[in-house]
Image: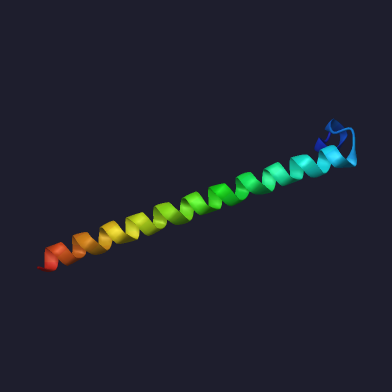
Length: 51
């Protein structure tokens, strides 16, 4: 059974696709935020070492 067979209507399929897109965007933004925080931390550690 495929995922398309699990939904009954086009509206339901659209709903699940929207939820999936929202979660994918949230995950992407989470990775981006974590990368920014780690870059900030590494920059400040390097700056402190140099001082």
